[in-house]
Length: 145
Image 1 (cartoon, rainbow, N blue to C red):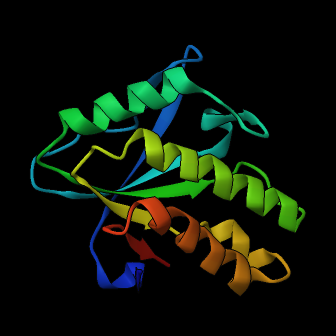
Image 2: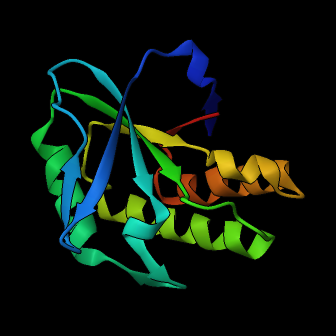
């Protein structure tokens, strides 16, 4: 699995938000040929341990597929700090599920390793676990830090 620095790439920052509990909405217009760092909030995809917002994930998949001439890196975010290793593992599981739902989006080149992991004990191990878990079924993904 390849890990690259975000500083080595030029991305337009954009966010996906859940609207009306189901629909994905981007915070800006997607332009053909551009590279996007697409922030996706944990709270939009997960209702709790192994309970996922399938309607939002389906809508997110359709939005990404519709922008087939743009390239996306998914950037997992959390509205609040994670307080434990268990929280980080739950976030990893949620975004692994997200990766499964968008697996056929050829314009997703990879995922950013969640920045919130850096504040936790065993951060390096959690970051490596995130990349390893997602790469298991998606060996083509590049991971960014």
